[in-house]
Image 1 (tube, rainbow, N blue to C red):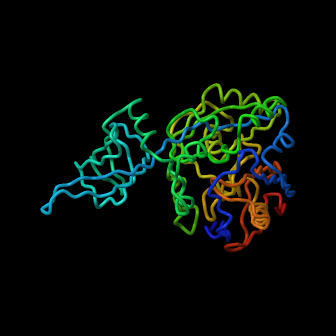
Image 2: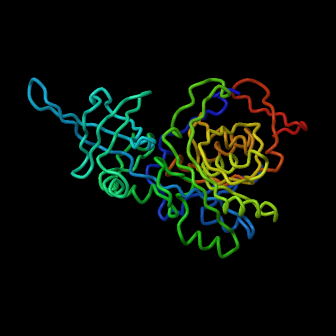
Length: 375
């Protein structure tokens, strides 16, 4: 299967740079089998039913983007340079893996001052990433980072505007709890407390899992044959409580609906045995057409980048032809795309979980189901 199979043209003005206000007023494109319905996120109360379970990713985004100054003595006297840092991951030795821009202007042993309370020393460089040791840890680090850092907006938003104070609220879910993500689980940004309360009142249940979304979620696929793509890994946890809740919903005939591709990838990782189990670790699960879903009965998600692994995931759930029609419709109706954009609710026919085999070359959306059903 070729990368070009997952490509489409998106008008630039459909890339959202701010979320809808209130959150739940965003548009929602519901795909139920072949049928498409233009709705609002608040209309989830019409599409969900008592006994359904939404799986929410409760990861909390850290203000991972820092701007500081490096000072150095030279033959011409004291000089300084502006250094931009994006935190990626805390390492076992107490340092952070980070992206540094420009990396050439910072040498091991040099310090960057981000604020009166926050500074860091470069201890080494590996694979294009710096290893920074900060001057404080624990709660002191969290306090200093919250004061000095900015939200790590995705590249397609950052190219249009800088992060600001509003993003510290907008780019965080209302149920964020477990600190560690450097990107938001964006489908969850559409939920506000009134909507959560309305769904709970009608009998929809909720389970929380944690997957710390990493910067790798924005890395492009660089291979033509997607079978050769190496998926980035992210840490996640499905607790015993969450696994039991999800299993009970499945046993009772209810639908398990992850909110966001992160929640879906995590629960399917925890169900590789065929049934959901408690799980913790790094997952690099790569979901492409032909994948067998063991847990997810539907998916709420945003509209994704062309040629991305997330386009492959939704195509695996719904079928290539249906996703092409859905995206054609969303573009024609000017839905807003990507992290701050509108949402979709994808409800597949049950047969869509079975493997199917592509026929034709790149861009040929003709698929043969094992029972010769054309999607």
